[in-house]
Amino acid sequence: MDAEVKQKDWMFLLVCLGLGVLAELSFFHGMIGVSYLVFLTGFYGVVFYRFRQTFTHRRIGLLVMVCIWMLAAGYLLYDNVFFYVLNLLAIPFLVYFHIVLITSPNNLKWSRPKFAVRLAAKFGQGMKYCAFFFNKTFRRVFRNLNEQTAQTVKRVLVGLVIGVPLLFLITALLMSADAVFQEMILELPMFILDLNFLESVFRTAAVMIFTFLFFGILQVLVVKTKKSSPKPVQESGTTAISLNSVTAVTILILLNTVYVLFAVVQFTYFFGDGLQEGYTFAEYARRGFFELVIVTMINWTILICCLKLITDMRDSMKRFLKLMYSLLIIVSGVMLASAYQRLSMYEAAYGFTLDRLLAHAFMIFLMVIFAYTLIRVWIEGIELLHFYLIAGLICYTVLNVVHIEQLVVEENLERYEDTGKLDIHYLNTLGYTGIEGLIELYKQEPEYPELERILYYRQLHMKEQTLNSWQSYNFTKRDVREELMKLDLERQ
Image (cartoon, helix red, strand yellow):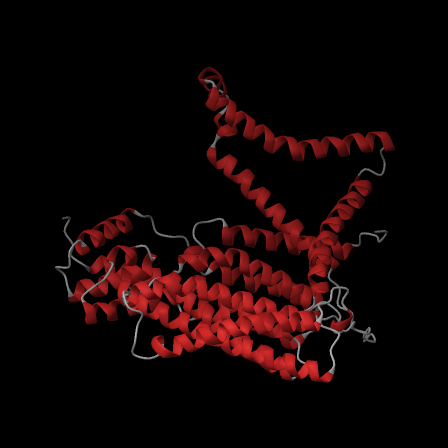
């Protein structure tokens, strides 16, 4: 990089510093709640300021942005422990994907592996820009010093950046290892070892890391407004790896023969009224669910490989392969339907859990994927990966929006009304959403075994818990807390 550091770069660095402070306030002060939406508002405000609303890939960019905001809204609306953790990784990745996407040339295919290379390259360029920026700044500040002195000062600063954190870590370890050394250190002025001071050091470090990260990446993202002629895209059939059509037909015939036989067996007793002798519905469901899902994933992998790698095809062979593909998709659909019913039977016997509902959602997603792939078999111009990525993003967002933990609670309470069976200990693991279900059960059945004891300790914990900061504000937590505090509970 040979560009010069301009005054507007310094101004933008100050803007990123403010954004870094906002990030630290949003994510390092208790549980995340409304603070995620506050941070996204500030972040995208900076993005719009930086690029003046000159964006590319507008349609897919709008979809990704809507999904980001809906995922972040889950931190305010719901209390889902599973998605709380998962979205700590998913949302930052989607935000980074989004800002790189809307600043990339329109002729760049975002659904190709080449775009993943661009994502990694832009991150590396951002870090290099930070190094370049501060190197230029250092030279400007110390331009009156000779070269040797300037290099010495530079090395001292680098040593301080690396050495100060190590100093705190090693001192803490040595204090734990030797009581005499610990006593000596504790005699130092208290402001050095004050926990608030140490906390301030770490919070300042977090602010600086966020600042440099935002500054570096946003500085290297440039929107090219001039239209460039699209480069010819290499056809999928010219890949270096290929698969002979005769080999593929042999594999497909062997597999489809077994799958058709399996489908016939399924229709004779599983989808009908019969059942294999010696098995209860629950045992039969548990016995084959995972195996069917794994086989279906293998079929999908084989199908994609054949569609991408087979090149030497005559018209007659192409038609026959399409029939084999279609048959493979149909029998895979039968296996998915079988697995879906097996899991439903298992839930009827043992109750609903988050994992089981997620498995249901995953099978529905696979059905959609197979249906689209069947269309691709007969209409060759359709891109598969493009649809897979969009469908996956929408499916993941929907799972966040529908509040799946609430569905688990409602299904279990409905099952309790029908069967009288309910695992209240599992509901207690679902956080505030589960507590809400237990409160509803307590209002109907206050004598339910162990229920009042569980709610009593939950209530006691909330009374001892300090009020959350504004960053952790959440509608579900607020409502459940109010309902729980109204109950007159006794320790059992």
